[in-house]
Image (cartoon, rainbow, N blue to C red; front, side):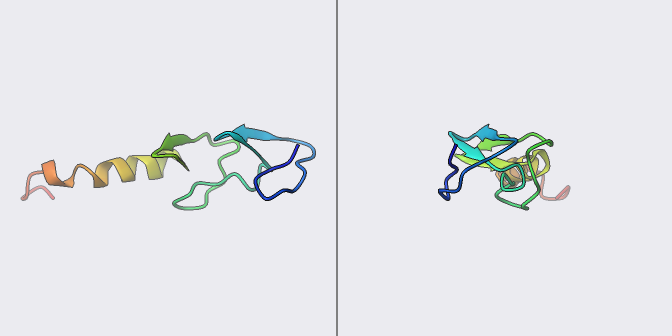
Length: 70
């Protein structure tokens, strides 16, 4: 199988985001954490680790937070 860079993926293959990945190449698009064993969340077409997904979602909620509590 070939990955997005055109290299053959031999051995363990991660199939995610409509592509094939070497386990070490499949990383969070925010913090670069390896996602092969940690799991990921697809957010706006990007693969994110759970922590970055929570932070990205929270960033969008700042307009709704109490000014004093921020």
